[in-house]
Length: 135
Image (cartoon, rainbow, N blue to C red):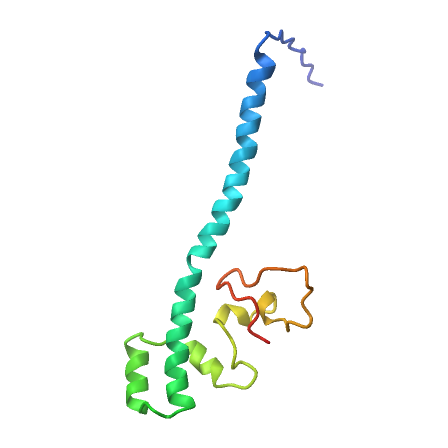
């Protein structure tokens, strides 16, 4: 069996005060990291909202009002003016109010009906920022 000798450390007067400074820095860094992570996610929310609004506008013009032709719809999809995947979902029953394709997943909070969500539970979808698209 390995035998280790104990190393005796002699403390100086200011050692305890210098030891507390790095510990304080570590706690403040951890707090800043968690805030930065939230901000990184929230930065993309307006992009998802703009993309959803553009696609929803084209879908409404085609499906409900019939104000645009099928050729213009195909042109919008080919030139990435509108996103094809959410439009295909919006045309199906029970997906009319879907905010993004990531919210189809079972673990997304915004797919729960608002009646089933607890009052104290705030937040929503981490990906798009939606607070409840299922009504």
